Amino acid sequence: MRSMGRRQRQYVTGIDGLRTIAVLGVIIYHLLPNVLQGGYLGVPLFLLVSGYFVTYQIYRHLMTDGYFNLRRFYKRRFKRLYPVLIAMLVLTTAYITLFAHPLLHHIKATIITNLLWVYNWWEIRNGQSYFDQFGGASPFTHLWTLGVEAQFYVLWPLILIILFKIFKSKKWVSRIVLLLAILSAVEMGFLYDPANVNRVYYGTDTRAFSLLLGSWLGLTWPINRLRVNLIRSDRNLLNGIGIAAIIITVIGFFTLNGQNPATYRGGMFFYSVVGMALIAMILHPGSSMNRWLTNGFFTWVGKRSYGIYVYQYPVMVFYERVVHVGLHPVINSLIEIVIIAVVSELSYRLLEAPLARYDWTSLRQDIHDLRKISWQGGVKLAFGVIALGIALFGFGQPDHQPAKTTVQARIERNHQAAAQHNKQIAEGKDTSTTKPTKLAKEYNLTNAQVKQLQKVKVTAIGDSVMADAANSIQELMPQAYVDAKVGRQGTDTPAVIDQLKSQGHLNKVVVLNLGTNGAMTKDTIDQILSGIGSDRQVYWLTAHVPTKPWQQTVNRQIKTAAKKHKNVHVIDWYTESVNHSDWFADDNVHMDEQGNIHYTRMIAKAILNGNK
Image (cartoon, rainbow, N blue to C red; front, side, top):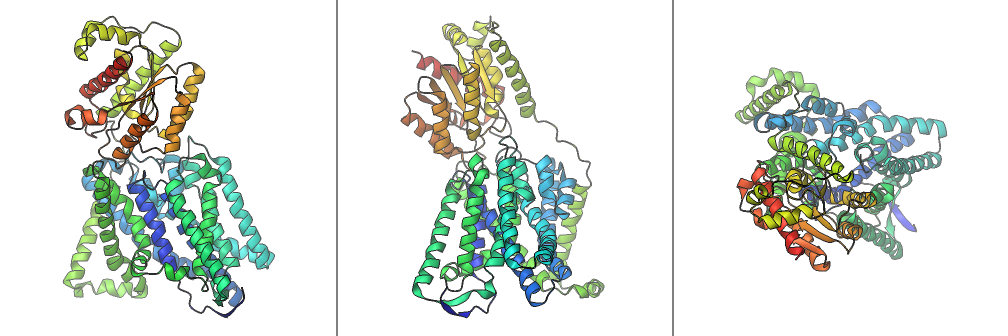
């Protein structure tokens, strides 16, 4: 760039703005995944920032001092990371011990692996999918990111120092770093398995490309070598690149579904490159991006972004265990954001800021002087000791697999029975019943209707709600082939439809129950209906998921699809059941035996009316 003067200051306030964008993306994704389905892309932004500043710091010291003080680096980094993490682990475990005892399962492994910064690898083998938004969400799932960052902090300085000792040239080291980033992205695409996203999503090696791209930028775009004064055309060019990068990032937040194969086959890498360009424009003193991303709100959030990220998920999980957020998702999301902000502010004022200034050499003397502590300090100390005691009690409990609930046992039993029934249908065996009168009374139908239903060939595709009702469906409609799976997402369904079609089990009448585990994109719905075909009649049940924010979105999507496709018919299970809590188990999503009968009757009546 044709310019004069170099930047002297090192703190770039616009990075707080970037951190704000990143953490808000992640939080809104967790709260309203149907609104911001790509909000998880905030994580690569955090990784890019970490990669840049760590590498820039190492490179600057190697060039100016000839060495890098590893001990000092590790001390500063872990002094920053540990207090908030430990506080979160203690407070969350204490809450679980008191109010959510089933979540104590795996608590020892969770705490130990987090303290050792290897929780992401434990999650790969034992954890739930990051995109499993329904079943038994863990308040610790999001901490995988800290494991990836901490491993980077430990290993990368050593690797970088070795690279400089071997190659001595920044040009060659930067090329190797860029190559490693590309190889990491290639590995993600190669190892991607839709049946096990955890390996590539949580893996340090498959997520390293964001950190490495930031590192490459730290070597090729060092902040102390960037010119301040630019001619107008160059300034406009930087601003244009920065604006384009923000727009593309926001588009990704709204469009890049975390269960789309393209996300892992280049999509996430592409958005990391875009994020890298955005960081470069923010860092350059000749650009206006830093100024545009600097304000009081961004500064406040940016300085507390670590605490906000750490505390957000426990707040959401615990809040949504006691509050049905489905009817008013936006209002409840705002309440959760306020709670997260309050908790994070308390953490920042009472823990992060004091410890950042604390002289640890005086720890022994301070312990000796506890008698002189103020009453405010005494209250804080007492609260901390009580919370720690409760957490240690929970930590010490025997690690038993939580007993299956009545619903879980019934779903498993009905799923197995449905599989056996499907096998009989596939083998051409007679599955009809000889008790139409009993069924007519049980389902409040006429004998003629029951006899008609005995002959109807139906394919039912769904998630755990459908699996729960499978026994009732096949009892009333013995020719029904039920393919239902716990945790099934809309994105899983096109492949299921293709398989059923190839096996000859996709009948002319198709019943769908999808949406319990999250909203679907328009493309996913189109793929589902295209796979079924316009020559089949589709009966789609609306979702009853009052505990999740996507309930209304899913139901709007189903009704919109019915207006667009003449062969799609809405079975409004939500409206029918919303005032009947007596039809549901404790989770208010899966039915009890009575609810299954009403659910199946609605399906049967809709099919009978459609066959008139």
